[in-house]
Length: 174
Image (cartoon, rainbow, N blue to C red; front, side, top):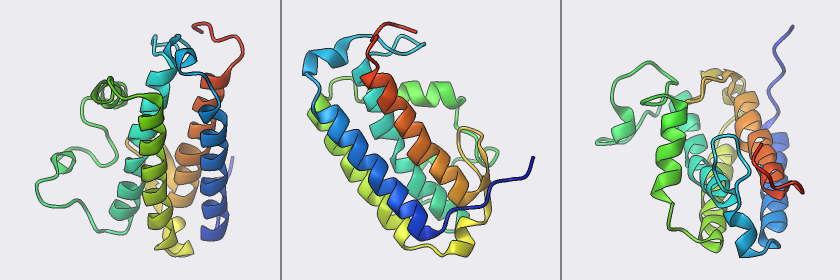
């Protein structure tokens, strides 16, 4: 099986914008109490899944910085030595820590955080070349491939999947 081609910067930007619009439009219309029911295999409520989506969005701009060789700012705890592309403590532990940090955030606050972080992702993508998007990377979750493909998988498809989880009609724990 051949590796998929990286999307162009214009294609990726459109996909990022479209998935953000879909997420915000779909989730903004839900009653607040609907977010307190469980819907995910680890027992997360819909609000916790939204916290996951909102909190991990910042990592995409960081992945771009790392791919461009810009590294992390001094004092960044995430910059502690470990194998490239590996989340400290494993991806499941990392995801849970991020969700726990936002345990008291309301749905509107989480949607605002998602918008803010998605805007940073879009700004970061606006500043890269198509050639950088073709550069091989490995995400903290272990996904490898051209930067553009990895970004499309995690920032577009991953987010859409979680929005569908939140909006699922059955709302039961899967």
